[in-house]
Length: 152
Image (tube, rainbow, N blue to C red; front, side, top):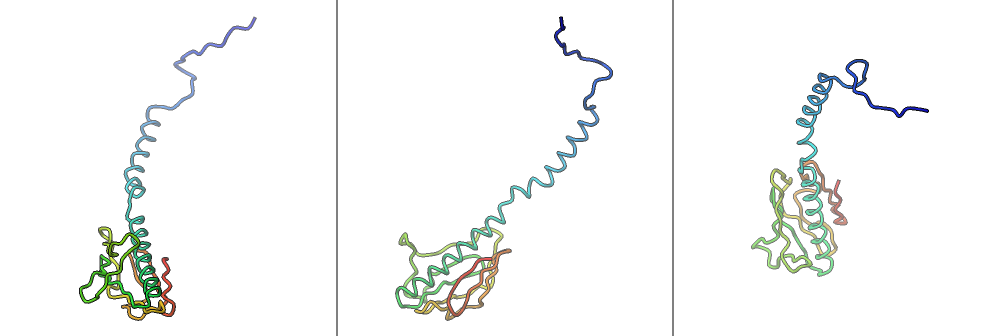
């Protein structure tokens, strides 16, 4: 008859990890988490992409509004905000919810070049400080002939 196996704690000849090995591994994991943790939880890349997409959508909306209404539409862009509520422009550009399109960049994100982007009734870019906008690490490219806005 076979005897059942018993688990016996032995003092010598057992395999396992020593206390020193465990401390070294835990120390290495602590150092890695302290250096890599902030990089994994940093939201600035997501904020840059979100603001670049939001700005591109505002420019596309202004272009479409110009084509639909047959009147020029413009967006005034400062270094950290989109403000179409300029007093020299008679009618603000309203979004689908009925409020004027306006916004500001997340903290630490700037947009260059700043200025007025105007679209004519054909949807072409008729006035702008440039056709390439830089939003943090992102780039928005505007085609002057068609008004097409692309985020890269």
